[in-house]
Length: 154
Image (cartoon, rainbow, N blue to C red; front, side):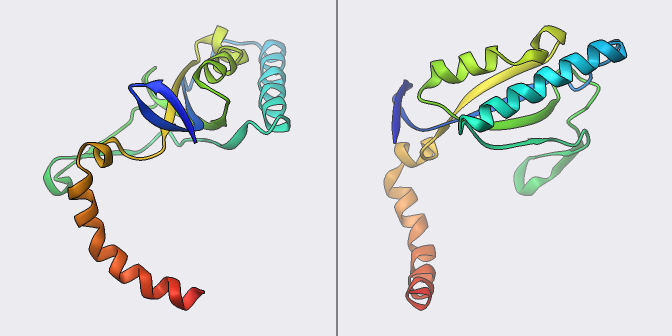
């Protein structure tokens, strides 16, 4: 397990790259767009060949934002027209945060308005570290149900 000095939280050696700027291709001519897409595809393929990609997918422009007690508020969003809308993600394997940032900096579509947010994937939810006794008690009923299932599977 990787342990970065990211607020002293243990990370997994995986980093989520969130791609924003879903309409970066607007205004590009056919030849320029082809060249950029060739470079982007080569970038992804190079990462994949090096074993750096765990998962990667584009995201649909429509969605819902759920908030409030019992999910009381359901709003349309995120909004694909927004420059802040996440258009896709890449779950990256990297030796450390610096390597993940350098990989993100090499993304060919950056010069066309795409932004990439790099976030370390944590080994566990921070609340588990802040309140271990409460989390342990909350897990006990689940563990009682799962133990017989694990024995059956064995």
